Each structure stands twice: as C-alpha cells, then as structure tokens.
Length: 162
Image 1 (tube, helix red, strand yellow):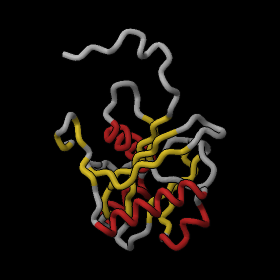
Image 2 (cartoon, rainbow, N blue to C red):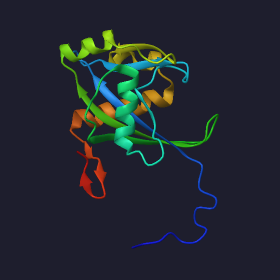
Image 3 (cartoon, rainbow, N blue to C red):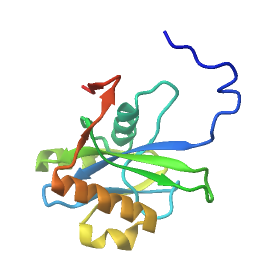
Image 4 (tube, helix red, strand yellow):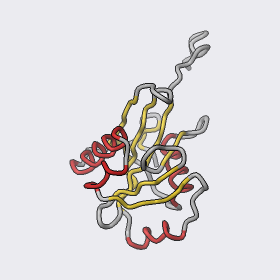
C-alpha cells in the first residue's frame, strides 16, 4: 500500500473542480441554467463534496437544479481556467444525453432551488448571446467532441463508472 509523503498535503493547492452535465433536448438545444451564482447562463452542475465521486457530484447538482436524474458515464471536455475573481479551476463536462419529450416535461414540473432563476433550452447558434466567453468556448468544444463521437469513459480506479 502506498502512503503519502510526510508533509505533502500541509499546503495543498487551491483549485476548484466543477462537474457539469451537457444535456440536449429532442431538437438539439442545450439545457442551461440562469443562477444567482454566475454571470451568464451555464450548464447544470457544481462542485463535489469531500469524497464524493465526480460524476455523482454532477448528477446530484443536475438533479437538484433540474429534476433530471441522468447517467453521466463519459467526459466530453476538461477545461482549466486561471485565477481571476475566483481561484483557478478545472471544469469537467459529462455527457448527460439527449432527452425524450417525456423527460423534457420533468423540467416544467421541477421546482429548482432559490439560486436557480431559470432553466432554458438554448440552440447552439444562440449560446454566445447568453454565456460568458469561457463558458461558451467550453460548451462549444464539448458539442464538437460529441459530434465527433469523442467521448472518454469516466473511470473509477481504471474501471468505467457504472
């Protein structure tokens, strides 16, 4: 068994990790949320709790924000952002799937938490109008990876997450 080196975690790096879900409706529009926590619209998601598996953090936040319970088993993008107003971050975008019309009705019945001001289906041609530049670039790259079939499995100790 490997043991951490003494003192290696006495001053851990300060970096945020966010886990987001890319979800499309039956027409191909992207699900975005408007929140009091962000400038512009963003993908559903958030940070993991201590010892929470990353894909389950994305799933928990997505369910809380939208009412959707989705299997998030593949990655479409990982994006690093420099420290600016917030500490540096690595953002992981998981593929949430293309919803059926029946699944889409979940959104209309769901009561999101108070910090979620609205849920919106936005066509890819309008993403730049409602997102920050960095968020828009990340989502555009995730959509490009999706179109090319360039999913990466999310692994847990070398085994695809179930």
